[in-house]
Structures are given as C-alpha cells and as structure tokens.
Image 1 (cartoon, rainbow, N blue to C red):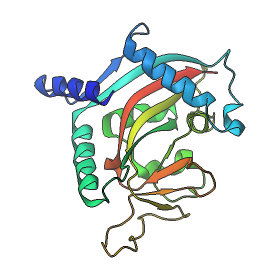
Image 2 (image 1 turned 90 degrees about the vertical axis):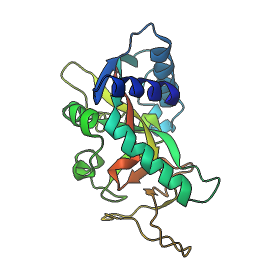
Image 3 (image 1 turned 45 degrees about the vertical axis):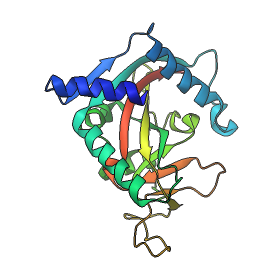
Length: 219
C-alpha cells in the first residue's frame, strides 16, 4: 500500500494540490485489502476487547485514502532520520490503529495528529502526553475511542507510525527520556509494559505519524 500511496502523492504534486481525500469504491482491490486488514485485526485482538465485536454485525461502511503531500514529506524526512540514527535492524516503522471522534477527522486529514488534543481520547494519558496508537485494532475500535455518531458510524485510522526505539510510558511525560547508550538521543516513542506483545504506542513528535486510511464502520 505504501507504493500506491507514494504514486498517488506524486500525482498530487503534479496537480499542485496538497490534500486530496479519495473515497475508495467498495468493489476495488484496495478497498477489499484495507477492509480485510481491519476486520482480521479486530478479531485477532486480545479477547477482552475483540469479544466486544460480533462477526455478524461488524461492517465497514466507507474507506477514504488520505493523500496529503506536505504531511507525507515531513513524515518521510523523519523516517529517513530515524533510519540513519537508530541501530541497524531496528524496526522504525509500524502500521498502527487510531480510533477517534468525527469532529477530529477534518483536522487529522489536513494537519495530521496533534498531541495538543491527546487528552480527548486518551483519558488520563497514562503513558504520557502524546498521541496514542494501538497495534490491536479491537482496542482502538472500542466505542470510547472510535466514538460513534448518531447514525451509528465509528471512525478508525490505519496509520504509518515511526515508533523507533521505545521506552516505558509514564504519566505526565511530554518529551521522552534520553537513551542510556551514550548517543544523547531521546527515545522515539513510549509503550505500555502491561501486555506482550505491546498494545499501545505514544509519540511526542507530530511528524512521526501519517494517516493512510480513514475507515468508517458499524458494529
């Protein structure tokens, strides 16, 4: 999907349009791939969250591809930096989920993720004052994160996130600690220590995430 996104963004640049939101046709291969990824991810999540969803009623109603040239450029530059400064073999990038409210969609599509709004959906911010993402779609798709509308639609983003080298999250953290390896580099993200594998990641630099797809669903 990354190659497709890159090609679409090149088209944006040629057309001198910074942001383009593309509604995918339900019969397209891309729509089917993203839909299947989401549904499989929900039902392969941890039972305490995945069991809240019913295979008979969970339904994807709309998928939009986010093509934002300026966001993608800053994200790509940050990715290049992490790949240069982090240890060889480090997994710097992951595809993660972010549940949100309808009122945040326009802002995310236009300007990306803003940690200034982190308290809206992260409740107490137990892992720090950043933007929260999850490796478990069933966690992000829960109602208090992917808040529903009056019509019953919920919203979740499939994102590319630069998690890089992570440390244990801590309430009140605004900037990650310096790594104890003598490099004077700060950690790239924070994580929970409660689950294995890790469920939540928090980033404190807004350039470290790119919203690939906005998925509307019902359950």
